Structure formats: C-alpha cells, structure tokens
Length: 215
Image (cartoon, rainbow, N blue to C red; front, side, top):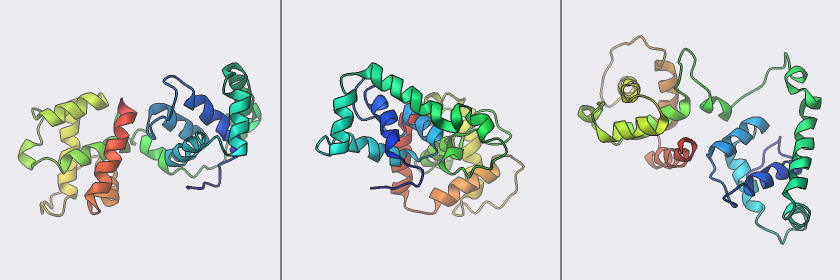
C-alpha cells in the first residue's frame, strides 16, 4: 500500500463522503472529484484511491466503526467533514500559509502552463499518447482522432496539432534539429522526458486513466 507523509486517518471521512456520492462506490483515480481532493490535501490521487479501496474492508475494526457511525447518516458525516475542513489552517488556511513555500509535485500536472490560457501538463500527456499512435502525415486537424481528443479536452483541434508539432521537435527519431520559439517547448520536453523514452505501455495506461478527468 502506498504511504504518504501527509496522510492521516481523519481524511477517511473525506474519502467516505466521496465514496457515498451517487453513484455510490469507488471513484476513478483521476475523476475530477478525486483530483480536487488530492490537490486540497496535497496527497497524490493514487494514495487516495488505495485508501478509498480500503474503505470497502469492513472487517477492519477502524473501518467498521466508520461505517457504523456514518454509513446510514450522511448528514452527520457532512457535519463532521465540515468540522475537519475547518481545522485546516485554523479556519483561515490562506493566511496561515501566507509566505510559506509549498513543494508541489503532482499538483503542477493539473495547473495551466505558464504563458498559456488552457493547456495543462495532463493535456500534453494525452496528446503525446496520441502522437505515438499517429504518423506525421496524419497529425492534422482533419484526422478524426485529433478532433476527438480536442473535443474531449474542450480545446480546438489546432491546439492539439500545435503541441504535436512541438513533440516532433523533441522526438530524436525524426531527426528534426530546427529551433522554434514557443512557450510550449519546455513543458513538452518535460513530458517527453517522463514518457517519450520509456515503456509506451506506461504512457498509454496513464492516458487511459486520465480520460476520467475529462469526462
């Protein structure tokens, strides 16, 4: 099981509330609600997903007590979750953490890239996955897969093609050494370094999971 230094068993209340949200049951690792909670707690979605999975094990005494107290009383759960959230930063987190440097990791993947208006690193991951499924001649707006991905991410197909053009610069197998001036070059290189030279199954698996975020 994944362990995170910021995890506390009190956070199970937040996960139980999310678990009980209709449709009741496990929520996808990269669903918007799971990602939102992850960013709030600064705990990666994979850790929260495993902890939510544990909520189904009612043979554990601590889990059984949670279900006895809250399973049929969502109003009590909502009240206690509100109290728990009120403790963060002594009910004034923005001022409590003012001037404190936070060391973000996975959170950056879901934030808009500097000097852009809509693209995030997770979008670049999705586009890179499609990049490896196409040939250069099909990396155009009229290709159905390009249009479908753009529609899913709620951006124009031209932006998908724009990112693919930058990935073509990053791709050592194409042997393109020209320089381009774009704010996307560094973010695309970072994503390429994470996924472009490794096991393609890792990229495809990550992209498949991330589809839930855009659902």
